[in-house]
Length: 359
Image (cartoon, rainbow, N blue to C red; front, side, top):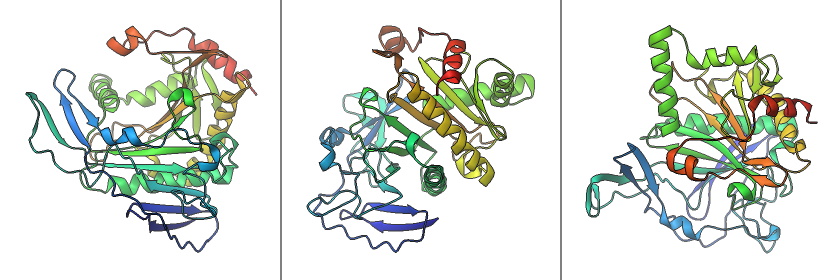
């Protein structure tokens, strides 16, 4: 792998990851305005959660035609976010970031008119990960060596972002499909470097802490052990198991766990990274075979915080879809959206069986 870092016209970083050694000379001729530094965060005192405010994102690019895609390679007449005629995998700073290392501190430490709501600059970093230069590709159609390169990019960015001041957790993810809310159809994912530990991670780690105090064992490891012995396993390999969780919230949901407890992607061995690619591509193809059409999904890496509870955390991927039938979507309606109380229409055991049969 060859890694090349360069700068775009507005000084955002772009990083090329190439399987073969390529001499990258990145020259971005565009005249771009400065990236917004107005992102801020406000603290919800009722839920004890931070909410990012990034009003400048209202102007971001929305579902352009394929011949104007900003994630395709540049060519005559079209200068995109990638100033190269081809690429393997590319990561660059988001032009419309929810969080920015250049975010400016708000004038006051409380929200206007509400002293209960603390606020601060939306410090952090948001990156885009382009999986392929082909607009019509998807992660599921990547050859194994290209998917493996994406894993290397995730590991590289997790390590580098974790070392940045103020970053508390790095989140690698992919949104796929317009039903999910994707605004660019080119195959890509994103990485957020949060200046706080997000609610889901906090909840999982709190539960793991109580479990260890009560039973002396790791909660994630025990969940994995029980699932490996049960009927919801979809695929297994030497280093990974993919299963539908017993209390799955989504119509189609699979968790992928390495058999060895590690805190994050950089901690995976070469053999574990190779094996992940095999299992993950298999699961993605089963997803698309369920309804003989591309399945909208979210793929979310749950990594340990940068500096807290790394002994408790257990790296795993959560992969799920909102499609509950070939022509129906699962909407987060009253119970889910207002109360956070999920109600599912399918049994996890049935979903696991259907995925095992899907080819």
